[in-house]
Length: 324
Image (cartoon, rainbow, N blue to C red; front, side, top):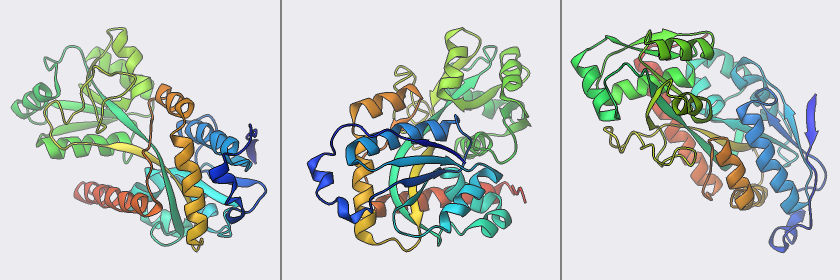
């Protein structure tokens, strides 16, 4: 088991320490269903360390990757609902995989039945990159160009059913344009081909894409979040640049097994919400191209996930995508 015991720091704030009895003392296992040193793992560690420092509760990250996150999520679903096992995951396992890989996901867990939603942790938007040879310099110009040349613009992805693929499909549907899909096995090759003009556009992570923009190798048109990115504050959102109402992010969230007591859920929710308001946490996440979530109740988080799941279900069904 690849695990990291996150160091405790300082005394727990009085507001959290006073009701500590509702969260059993001892080590809390936080399953991350993706590889160590990946984006989800890094976000989880930043937040979990702050929760440990705030509460005096030792949080241990346990990476359980495989099968698109369904292995780790399935293991978390089978744990006791006592607060000693949590799942730190993304929209992949709870809003996408149940529709994209229904057979595989169903064997591992039922996203709508086997978990207790606890806290919304963070969001990561993408950046829309285009080849410099394309005449479009704004989102609106890209949409106009694509409408004038239906099916002639190619978009690169990291493969069928990936968030890059789904983002591209959602963009095309909302913009009312026809684009041609070119899947790649390696992101590096898609960047090379995008710079050379062999493909025309790509949705990439902001930290990965920005260096190519700074060097002049690629052109950035917009970000996909509801707000501008701290890493590129001068870059507009797609909603600002020709596609009103468009927003698409990968969210990060905390779950427990089904059957957790409401007071325990509230206690853990409070701890994560407090950690996410810490300036050091906010700054650390921002450097990764990730926005710390605003405080939400567990019920608000559950409603957000339900809406996001319905959205991706439509995209996947409309485009007849299936991976199992």
